Amino acid sequence: MVLAFVEHADGAPDELSLQALTLARAYAGGGPVAAVMIGPGAADAAPALGGNGVTTVHVAELVGGYAPQAWGRAVAELAGRLEPAAVVAAGSDRGNEVLAHAAVMTGAALAANCVAATPGELAEVTRVRWGGSLLEQARLHGALKLLTVAPHALAIEPAGAGEPAVEAFTPELRAEDLVVQVSERVDTSTGGLSLAESPIVVSGGRGVGSSEGFGMLEELAGLLGGVVGCSRAVTSAGWRPHTDQVGQTGTKISPELYIPCGISGATQHMAGCKGAKKILAINADPDAPILASADYAVVGDLGEIVPAITAELRRVREAS
Amino acid sequence: MNVLVCVKRVPITGGKIVLTGDERAIETRHLGFTISPHEECGVEEAVRIAEQHGGSTTVLTLGPAEAEEQLRETLAIGIERAVHLVTDGADWDPEATAAALVAAIEAEQAAGNDPDLIVFGNESADNGNFQVGIRVAHALGRPCVTGLKGITVHDGRVRCEQEAGGGRDVYDVPLPAVVTVLEGLNLPRYPSVPAKLRARRKSVESSEPARSEPRLELVRLTVPPGRGRQAELLGEGAGAAPAVVELFKKLGVA
Image 1 (cartoon, chains in turn green, orange):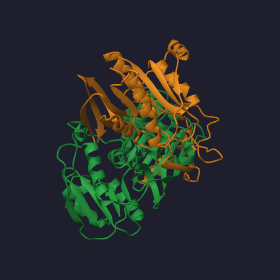
Image 2 (cartoon, helix red, strand yellow):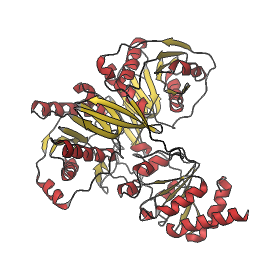
Image 3 (cartoon, helix red, strand yellow):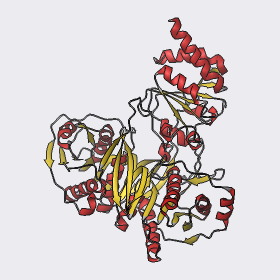
Image 4 (cartoon, helix red, strand yellow):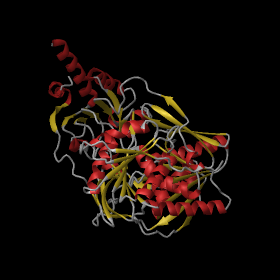
């Protein structure tokens, strides 16, 4: 049996957790897959997992805000009782965090951000390093294996249509488990399109030359109904805020079209835009690494090219 | 207020990663090195906290002899003491790493340098195991808050802000505590030349910990296949604009 920690919001299971169930089912090799869901609203989201091959959902409706160690305790307690071969979660912020706590509590090793796993006394896992620029093949030791699944590495695969059994449980928490708990929520949304969700992203790198240089990128992005991003070199130079950074340590984006301008294509940056459907690179250097990852390219001075594209786009729209 | 920040030496990988012949590491002969980006912000935050609240700052690393270079860079930023757990450069799994760091921190405690706040990067840039800070916190019996973009020390507590879905989740936990931070927490300062020169003369305390057997055991590394083709060239210079707009039309974004 494999136990999956499934996150949920607004009464529905989280997309990354459903991707993780694909690996959980493969690991179970036809055996049963149970799920654990925690927090307010978990019971409402639980029945939907029947469509993803889950037979039993264990629900702990812990009150109050997210408490990583308490949630880890709930997963660890259930793993102790059910004795699964593995516990699987999404490689999300919370998935990685909850399983790290559960790993300490169960004495298990944890492999984060796996893309494949073969069960066995020594489980063979393939996991991402360097934000996805490298893959690591590793052996995972111990009776219980803990794995998280790299986001967007696996597709959601519907399986079965039965209603899962839903069983409520109340984990035995210790006082120290609730020391770290969300006590306040601050809304910082600007109402505008977010970098992570925008269908078009126009990014600038060191090649843009200055913070003022981003004006022309703003103009093009505005015309296309997209937003502006940037590389790490740009935020380090203080030209743009860190919230605009696309990369391994910035925002991960998956737009329909990504237009990196004056960005060489360092692995740090590419880790953040792997999810882009199409990439149009504008770069002065025909040998820049970004051209090997792009679908289309324009070579030359972006200070001339970007305004020319904007002007042409306006002309064509006015003519039609 | 004593702050201890943990850092890791990693190569600056550039555009293309090349592996060593045994496929167990990155070929670094032609690469520069740095610390993980999240940790640069951790170092900056440690220095700022000490500037505001007084107290000491210590940097701790587990890494090869060459990692002394990164320790000295943090000393140039304003960290006061450096502790180096020297390895032979082999890959340490997260449990072995956490165990070595815990032993070093316990030695600090025994010497009267008990850190009130221990700062980690949320994950290392290279191995990305997402667990060392949490493992260390459990071993020391301290609370751990991860993925922080805001830290405020006040009245023996630390207010922690974490970005989540268009807002920020706030935690307020008692010290001593462990936090893991993200890039964007602050804008790290550049060291001055005199500070760099002073940092070169500072002593670094070093020891050689024993590595426990890995339970997440590296077998080999591979470079994932790329898109496997070069980009289609739409043109050069401003003259390419009509071809680009044609592409926008084709993709339905014009």
